[in-house]
Image (cartoon, rainbow, N blue to C red; front, side, top):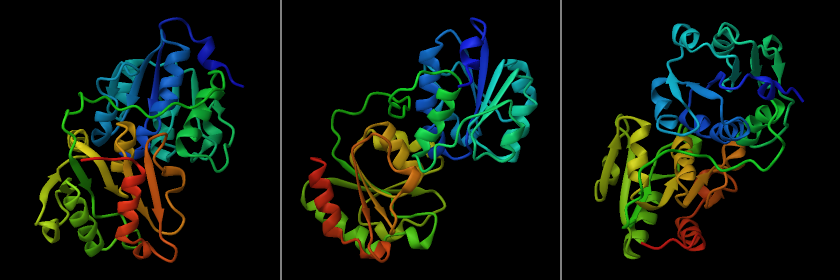
Length: 295
């Protein structure tokens, strides 16, 4: 085990270079929390793209959020810089950060260049892969906690069933007719059904229900805090829901969610046998019942 975290002087500064997707950023928060608990005196900076800043702002584990450029990182003067992104860009940021210790994951591009590299965790969940780096740096091995996302208190009336009807690829997109069939049944059971999507995505097929397009992923926090259940498979949204402990039904093609499954949160994962189209709306309603969700 590399114990660089233990050897840092009291009150030192450190930095984490964060992934470029919101979902992956949320799943590094358990690793950050483990390192902060081990050394609460260390001040951590999150180096994150603008779209991901909300994940780290106003959290007790992160002292500041820096843009992913060298001048602000140099100004922070970290003694340890841990790269959770694993790209060529993040490698350059990490290696030129000026930190005495540069750390990364085994699967990172150019992993050989870091001063220390975490062991390969194999087919582990992404949250566990990231926690492996924390353990490697000196955190005692322990259970990996749930993801954390700062948010205001949830509303007392959580009657909404929030649905995201799109996905990154066609083979991961459940048919609009199936979403509508599930929505109608949820409405009969007393849920207020709300369809959400990014502002560039067309919600007109679902216009019989309340529509809530968002301009940025951070806006989904407020919507989920009104929701008693989330239905969909968009990774950013599933991880935001998981971090907020909102029950969810994730509809997937064969193979399920893999390393990006909701982490330590109430969730039902429905994977189609031949394709995502083989998931039946009745299965979604049954999953909502198993989660014990009420409007």
